[in-house]
Length: 225
Image (tube, rainbow, N blue to C red):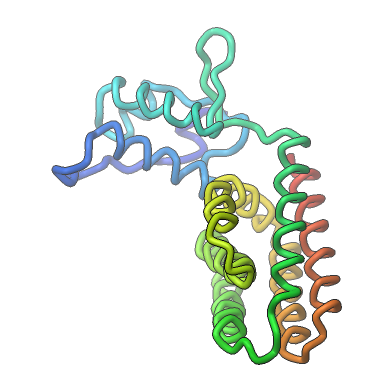
């Protein structure tokens, strides 16, 4: 499978004068990876991307270096560049972190915490519309906001900064699993259940649903990869 068969990148058009070309190319490729348009294991060609974006190979090569540093691409023998493939160990570690942090955060959310409850409710309603529209990219974003809102209940800035540093990886994993339409629907139903239990003060029931939610997401992802 070639890059051209999998995705068409539009030329960059008029660029902001304050952004170096390498940064624009880097952000364009990165977004395509995080949105799942460039798939794990897919080979990336400097020439092909340079032609699609109407740039020289130099900013593409520089973008590849930055993406390699972020573990979004891997350079194989023969200088072949591919979209990195998450390992089972990496998946396990990310979901273990999420379970520890999010389950504890959920225990801090009381029924009278209207700010968090209302935000979660708004995300649930938005997700229902996005499911109907089959807008997986925006659903990924709303899903992310739902879980980050739960984490905000910890009121721990250092921990939130750490979780934000993992967001590219978490978002990338989530977009892969959400492409499974059955899981996407089940995932949002579990968000509704978590919200309803929180509103009723049934904290441990909400925690139980969240634990099941994250374990299932991990297994869906492992099966896909």
